[in-house]
Length: 213
Image (cartoon, rainbow, N blue to C red; front, side, top):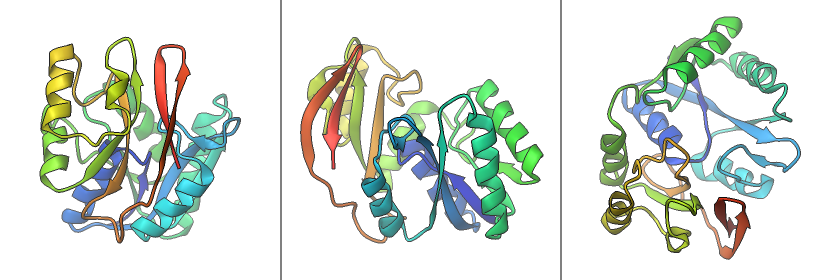
């Protein structure tokens, strides 16, 4: 089936994309929700230039869907309809086990007449992290909740040492509670690695973010 991937540039949506392709489905585009005020992707904070680099690195067109937050459902549905116009028959999401999120996304698909897919559903949070590493993806830590994890993890790619730090801190190593966010910069579905530079650390309340350009 031809599908649109709801893509955040992070590890879960990248693994979901990998699994959809592995199962024989064909991606037609990637849908990225963009914070209209910040002009960056929601949650993972990729700016326009980086998103253009993702488009080239993955070899798939990006549908950028700006939202100020109040119109988020409508903006997503508009993007899904645009993807349908490009030939998508289904829409895939990287959710793992949060029922409310899944029901919300299923409703968006119902409104746009697309078949919803959840390739990571109930796979196990730690299992997903270990699988994406086993497959050879490089997942760069873009932000951390600095009340839970040390800033020293910023700019590092997840590996066994990083997992050990997270386990010692007692957090979910998949980051489903907002402990950290990633940008995937290379792996099997990439046509080429995502070129990037690391800048300084920015602090926003409980969160610390490394500037990735």
